[in-house]
Image (cartoon, rainbow, N blue to C red; front, side, top):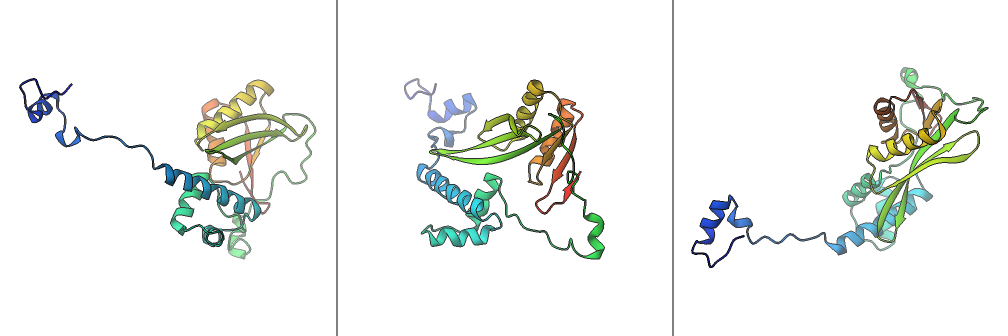
Amino acid sequence: MIRKDNGLSIRRQCELLGLNRSGLYYTPTGPNQAAVRLDESLMERIDHWHTRCPYLGSRKIVAKLQEEGFSVCRKTVRRLMLKMGIYAIYPKPNLSKRNFKESIVPYLLRDYTVSFPNQVWSIDITYIPMPHGHMYLTAIIDWYSRRLVGHYLSDSLEAESVIHAVTETVKACGVPAIINSDQGSQLPVMITRICFVTSISVKVWTAGAAGQTTS
């Protein structure tokens, strides 16, 4: 498009085309492959320690990684944990104090009898390390049959992957009475969006790590 042998200066040609001359010689570069491979190695080890000790926070995981020989700081580990959608699981403070008891909600599925298919589904997202990167598996299990009724693989934690998994499972198996999930950072919001976007009349019960729920 821009030539040196057409009688016009490079500056004039850029002006006529509405281009910035400083960006004329810019060559886009791809991601730093060494940094990508390091992030993948770190995420694999973070997933290992989170699976083995889910109560470890970013500080403790940094210490574990440094013991393994990685030169890593807490900021990097927090960034990767956020990217993977994982966080330390531990009892939250102040729930045992009298003034906070009104915030405790009983687990709604405790002593609940599941007597037919599609009565209760459980949904969860798990991180799967791959040779070159990682994937997220959204899995849906029917409590009555203990059968995997739906799943979806995605390379991100976007809500669309959960919406796709639930809507396709509903098409194949029908509408459940209850969808049960944990209190992860994504699932409750995603399931609420599913009910709104797909107009599925589903009561969502989210089970907490310590037997608490929000409904």
